[in-house]
Length: 115
Ligand SMILES: Cn1cc(C(=O)NCCCNC(=O)c2ccc(F)cc2)ccc1=O
Image 1 (tube, protein in one colour):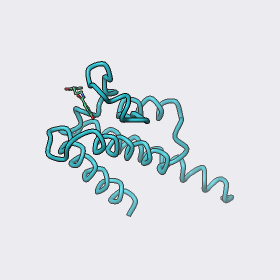
Image 2: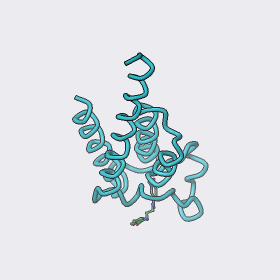
Image 3: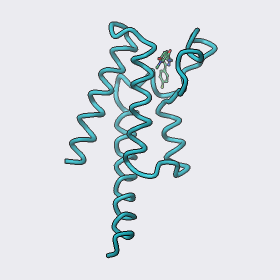
Image 4: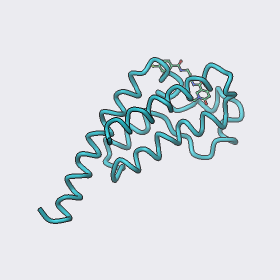
């Protein structure tokens, strides 16, 4: 097949992996803080501190709207969820710990799927 066709196949495989990884993230017991956008009316300071909010439902929406070019652009958004969490929450807090647990789970899973 041509290089272009191979690229297209890789992107198809990459997007299939995005769906698998997102479903596993959503099913994780520590996913609850990340399933929906943070309600900035209920969480004082969030809108000021976090410049690029991201959550699993927004990622699912973007995936459904074909807004991820490949696995890399998907991983950037998932990491944004965890980076925002670390910025806004103490490590020693329920949501802070959930973020660390989810990041560790995600890093282990996508490297397993790729290796
Ligand atoms: C990531 N982050 C989240 C919050 C936060 O307060 N998030 C809402 C938690 C409440 N949401 C739930 O409890 C829930 C949601 C869906 C579901 F299916 C089950 C439970 C605050 C700061 C922050 O940095």
